[in-house]
Image 1 (cartoon, rainbow, N blue to C red):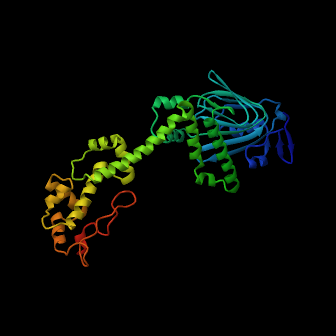
Image 2 (cartoon, helix red, strand yellow):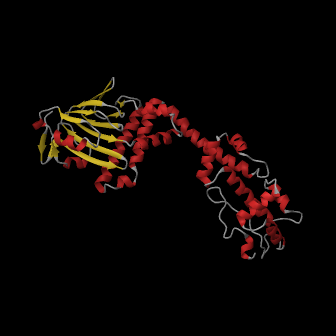
Length: 381
C-alpha cells in the first residue's frame, strides 16, 4: 500500500490514525519511529518492510496513569521484542499483524485484539493503524484479584499472564464485548485528551482498562460463569456479615467467640478480621467489647431499683466484675458504680430535667454515633 502525504497528513487507503490528534503528528520514517517507540514498548528492533524512503508513520505516545500508550498509522513493519518486562496489548484498527511467540503463530486483522505476555516475540504488519498498550504488572495482578474477589494461586496467575490471547471478530460475545469496551475507553481517552490530557488520569481510566484486561483473561481461562459466582460470593459475604452483626447485637449476654462468629456467618476467620477492620477499624473482639460497653452504659443510666452493676454486667456478657469495671473505666473514664448512683438520683427517664439519656443510636456504618462526652458524669448531669 503506497503512503501519500497531503497537507501534512499521512494518507493510507482505507486507514486513519487511531486518535484524532494523531493526524496532526509529524510524519516520520521507520527509523525515527523505532527511536521513539522502542523504549516505550520494550522492543528490541523495528524495521521497515518497504524501502526506507517509502516508509512513513504518524506516531503518538501518551501515558495514561500506569499505562504506556503508543498509537500509530504507517507502512508495514517488522517488530522484535527479545526481553519484554511486561505484557503488551495490541488493538488493530486497520491492517493485519502476524505474531510469532514461542510455538504459536497469531494473526490479527482490523478490529481484533492481541494480548502478548512478557516473553520474546516477533511480529510483522502490513500498513496498519494500531494502538499498543503496556499494562503495569502490579496493577494487572491487583485487578485480577479484584475482579475474581480473591487471590489467584500463584502458579495459576503466572500461567494466565504467560499465555498469548487473541480476540477475533467472530469470537464469543463475552470476549468481543470486553474488546469493544476497551476500544470505547480509548475513545473516551481520545476525547479527554483533546480537552485536557490530565483528565484521563484524574478519572483513573487506567484502572478501568486494567480491570477490563483482567476480566478478559479470566473469562478466557476460567469462563464467565466462574466470574459471576465470584461476584455473588462477594455479595453473599456482605449479607452474611450484616446478619452476623445483627446476631451479635441480640446475643450480647451470651459467651461469644471468633469460632462462634465463624459458625454463625459461614465466613472464615481471615474474612471476619478483614471485614471488621474495613468497616469499623478494629478486630471482631474489640467491636464486641465496644458494643457490650455501650449497652452497659445505657442500662446503668436506665437502671431500676433492683439493678446492680454486676447484674447489668452479666446481661452485657461479662463474667468477671473486675474485667467489666476495668473495661468500663478505660472507655468512659468513670466507674460503673458512679454512673449507677448518678442515674438513680435523677427522675425517671423521659421526664423534664431528667439526667438520663436516650438509648444510644448508631451511625451509618453500623457503629455507635459519637457522644458529646464519653462519660455523663463529666458534664455534671
